[in-house]
Length: 274
Ligand code: BMP
Image (cartoon, rainbow, N blue to C red; front, side, top):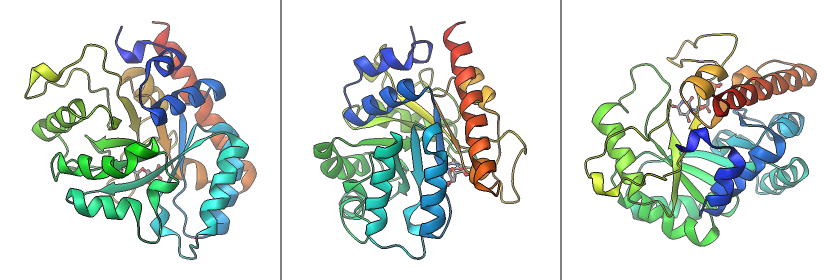
């Protein structure tokens, strides 16, 4: 059966990439396909929110470059939280340059992303060299890469032939590309070279633009519910930002994390039982 009709545990057993395998195992162990995106600008808020939502998530998504008071000890604290609460880390860096440049951006600079982020992502726009560059750094460390095959925002250009080329690039680099940022499953996307299609492919689909209470924001973001994303569209992980961390008190943030975890998991259980 197609990957999305198997359990996360079954998929974990077969997955060759260590980061993807660990994520699938974590999802199963915690019964959570929820990734919280913690888009705040102060270290203290960042760490407090992650400590509150930690028990309910499989993955935390960061934009490390928006932290104003960043210093390298933040990464140690983040790592401690990831061990305390048993979740993986996804730096949403959206690399988008030639291979040589992204290899440097991934390994070096202030953030040294490859040294702490299990998963990161890239726009396919530069072509396959971006994967080679990132893989040269990430593969020896057991990291995984997601390609942005689609986006959640209104009017985005990642559609049609662009999405198909992204899927093709992933299919020809399965040792490092573990999945997609996308709004639906990609198995049925036809690629320019049918010979690279593998009936057993298992790309993880992580999906932002998830919200239960509002349909969008003032800058083009569009939200769907966990049920639409996981049950109807077959995606694997829901990514929720403001719907969780934007709710004020710690108690409310915790309640929202539990609410999204429950919704996402129920949608998955219904999916695999149909
Ligand atoms: P929110 O749930 O608050 O709208 O946040 C969504 C998060 O997902 C943001 O961190 C954003 O950068 C990211 N994201 C997105 O919204 N749409 C995409 O297509 C790709 C993203 O990475």
